[in-house]
Image: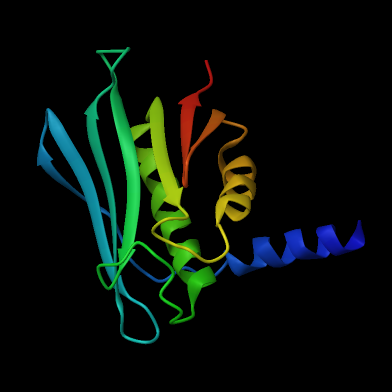
Length: 154
């Protein structure tokens, strides 16, 4: 049990040093999206996008989708600095949630695009820790893909 607790503390501490970057709102009022771009310590470019579409069942609300790429790749690059990049994506997401108070957010991972060890466990821990008090969390596995859907609690 101590090992899990230590690992969880290391995970929390790893997210304490995001890169300094701000999200910018773009697009039209009926089709908004947010974008941020920063350079990692090795000079690679990381782009974070949170885009929107009409929710399929709740037409008065937007469904927001979070994604990020490093040097145009959605897979692990092996370039290092993953925890600081995750810290930055997490901080940008938290800033977005404070600004927009979205009802629906989703993001996904794919073993097909990232054939090494799955990030599912890391994403599960992150979403529970950082969004669990404000959102109901549902994750769905389909083949090699896992999608997390967050719905704001009433």
